[in-house]
Length: 440
Image (cartoon, rainbow, N blue to C red):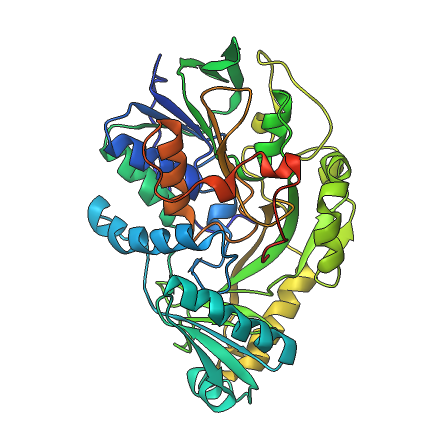
């Protein structure tokens, strides 16, 4: 079941030519379109389904700096600045609230990891405080839990996954961009190693610059053009409650994570619990991901399902004049794991007894597109001039979304990048220079 999401209208006419085509209207693509249009670029934003319909509306809604890989922190910090002003700029609420995030645990090793991260926080000037057991209990009043300790990331916050991408796309349109939903990009028109257009199911758009922000579909799109992009997708299940008592704004515990939404409901999920399905793409990049899978073997289950035969990781190629996999699955909407839904709600009710009479409004699953080092690619791609890849956000791309879109926009038109783009270079995944495995 797809989560509830804000819907926006599409532009009927496909432009003949633009400065930049953005493929994929999740939060990163919508943000890229917004920042490009703001600086006067002619932009077409393409989405095979609906704006924000896949992972951008299926996450917790956290906008955080806490516990990030140091390579992501400059981008996360700029992202927080952008979240704080975007609603006012566009004139519509994205649901952003700098409410702080609370982490609480009885796991000695986990708390030690949080304590160790304080060195990173100090290096970047991020305000974060370790909590004693008593302080963690105070921050989670109403849970009745005794905690060993925790963290309060004071300057972090949350936004509304149902609103963020559609509002950013709306902002792009206000600045002159066109938005085309139910309009799959089938491939690129390429001449002499450079992009000259995007072939869509409704016609070709001439352009010299393309941003691919295709989420779980990005590797398949790249492969069609001979580009290797190691990517694995983890299927995770989340739920949304009915309107509930005000307990806490945003909380992580080993049992479950909770985020209060604007209407008083909660998004609840179990962190790290997911399924990696056996697929042709997964087999292709198994060696790249082996260190990560070994490290996280307790958190990830392995399975086999229909994704082996259809979807972003299945076998097959396609011609640009025929129906493609992107049109066959307009919105990637895997079924939630019913057992996980029941387990998640049971854990939340055990954590907060006030939720015992609160029902489940909806549940859903989504695919988290991951890279081998759990750091995204936001980068031009060698050998294809005019092509920028922005994908592989590894489960923590929502908070990065505005800044990631800004960086992709900068790279697409050769503007000064909002942060140093080198940590996000595509080549690191191919030449072995990616460094250590990051946080997932």
